[in-house]
Image (cartoon, rainbow, N blue to C red):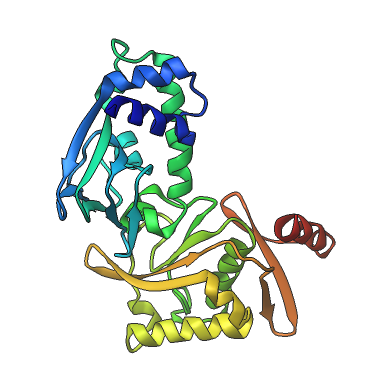
Length: 297
């Protein structure tokens, strides 16, 4: 009865949608079952269990890197990141009530004695796609890991918010550089901007910007956003000061906006997008077609 229930859960999950029924049935040979009492920890950021977990009974909580909580309920799969990357965990999971999970062993899944290599490859590929989506959001990746991975189409580093390190003075061009990256993330697929980090990933901190405290810095940033892009866009932006290796930096998470984000510079408005790892001002002739496709298609 337990095996039949597990088979049904596996067949219903998109992760295994490309597999034939016989291949899904073969996974049952590498499945283990575990029970958890309320409060029992499945894993945390200091442990790397090599299992993919499927909730069959009960409920769990997932604590994300920003300390928010997410419910994991019957039918949900978790543990994907640790399953693929054995050296990295993005959060902690514990049972909130008596719960049962079925676990797929990584070592057995990748052992051709148990599972055909073609089947294992399809599962790993689907897991990689799922994880890529996870890692684009604040909930699923720590600031330390972002810095380690470096800049990309969805991650950018800035040394300061308002201080020009070359002239050793405040410079509105620094603020504009931060805002245009944020606008580009909003107009594209979202992204994370870290202020206080050099292009090469060196953590510089926030001291150069000379704010009296972190609250003043966040208030200044919020005023820049509302003055230059509008109040409505703040709902897609989350800014926080975080400590990395004992040094404070500013993390700005930008979700894809539901409306176009224009950046005002004096009397002129600009429309920015991400093109690979760069921020690009879109030509006026291309703004309308882009907006139609991005926001209304």
